[in-house]
Length: 239
Length: 239
DNA sequence: AGGCTAAATTGGTCAGACCAAAGTTGAGAG
DNA sequence: CTCTCAACTTTGGTCTGACCAATTTAGCCT
Image (cartoon, rainbow over all chains, first blue to last red; front, side, top):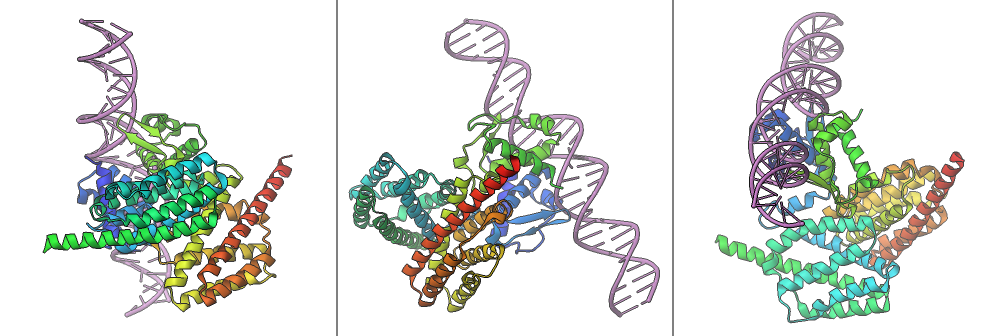
């Protein structure tokens, strides 16, 4: 039920990301793509516009050339994660590293510039993470909601945009490919949640940063474990 | 010499960002835009595709609706900065805050995962910042090059993508509207550069973070001062 | 006034055409 | 044989006009 231009765009993006077209190489002409995808040139053109805007290609009269993924937009991350059935664990770890760092920054901003009410809302989101009797799925959602709320409460537009972009592209993977295998260490999360609560209450920025540093490590451990379990499950299903 | 679809897209983006179309409001139909911009419907459609991909509008059969800027892509920052002659100083400060935080993260990653050669390259970029006899323009370029190089050396793809996006959108403003008014405190920069050099040499992560924290404050001071001077100059030219 | 149907509007797609700027090819000069 | 430059082809950018399906809107009937 997707649009034709979207189909063509996704196919092209996938071809580029998987390396079928090397960086610097010339992309097929619009008229070639028309016959290849059995689409109208207008649809192909809109697809090319998407690829261009993703920073994966540069178009000029005479031909379009593929760009290196390092010079692309942040929005390619979702495509990279969805490229294979199981996402690249290294990329997952990198994303978590950036997200956690930015959440720490956002929380610092909240502590310094926001009202006690805003801090209270965050503390409220900390409550479910102190419990040990919620299931893994709810625990994951609670972690997600906490980070998302802190980001949006930061009043820093670039921070909000980056976090939303990352979360939106990360969420499908986290909730589809890895959700069934996430086994968070709820006891450690509870400990850090209480420390974070104290730091928020006493407005101790240094303690806050320490908490997020610890949470960073824990989040990445959780994700790594979930990936390994998912990989085992996949191999078992294949063999 | 820009493309027609680009002109239409920029006009629409500007209209949305400036608040001419409120969030949730219906955008004019494609056929209306055709007559308004004297363009072909294909061009208008490509423009709408750009606006859509920027996250500024959602299109459905029946009509397109404007989205809030908080739910847009990171790529709108450049348009926001270029909206008026002088960029929003609050947004500038927010961008610098995020960039500096990410540079600190990237540098930490380099220190932990890169070779001594990579660290040596960064130290090399630190040399011009220790000098007091370079002009303001070169000093700005040296700071820019340092941050950019650290980001790209981090081997963290999301980090690279975010930093490149932010830098590319920030650079035009910094080099056009504010470059002539930047008066960096070279002595303080030199002090921090030496501290940073030591931290890199001794691979002291804690010291590294302290240095970047100090550099963050200094960078934002420099930018704030440049903005105020630019504003004074603009008012003088107007009055 | 409320709900339902029909008409008008709108986005998505398609076909074919023209232009200007790239890229490609070939012929001629050295 | 090589190099240069012209013409030729390909390619992207734009335009016109048309059709379909989904949505919106208007009007009608109850």
